[in-house]
Length: 293
Image (cartoon, rainbow, N blue to C red; front, side, top):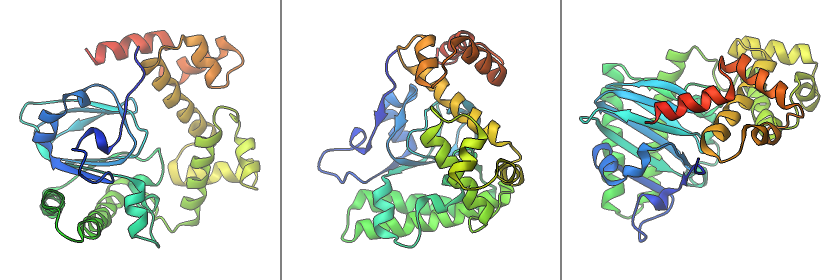
């Protein structure tokens, strides 16, 4: 299996254009960049709005329905691909982290609930009223990007910020997630980032509790309160996402995948994967090949 490609903004626009932002009509985007139909990652944040069409969008090995009003929000590093009907239409834009953070000093991208935790769902299914609000903002973002008038970066930043504020309200209404100022939310976000940094070496809840200077029981309570999951489940989810990425998009044998993830016992990795996924690593590989055919 070939190594998974990672695309930055330069893969989608001409050299003379800026390297921090890209926007396009979705139909034009799909026609111009056929390579995005295969599994890949981006080094940027992405927003994709479907105003028409249907299909399936696979993001980090979970499959989401595509329909009118589907709005997908992806973070850097997430693996995705899709199968779309020929009439799929809408808008898409990408931007770097630096683009947003350089404009807004007191607010960061991870303050928005859909970018807050890796485990949060990457899709909002907009109602008719919500869609009527967001479509004009996507249209203006696209028009602004194409015209390249003075102060384009500032205006694009303001439009993206307005969109993300609106989407945060829709997201929180639909997902039943605590607001970002909640202390529980902030602690679980910190845990998620620690897991992201250390999952290859630290696989026990007590190791993360020690890093966060709290008891294992207290950390477990926070996870249950916010996500209705145990700390062990969060660690396992991160391991499984990485295992799936390596199994599907690298040339490594299963034994080497096990080793890269920090499992000293190869047979234990097989049992762990099967318990979490319901298939052996080999069965998962074969099923993924079939999905992408």
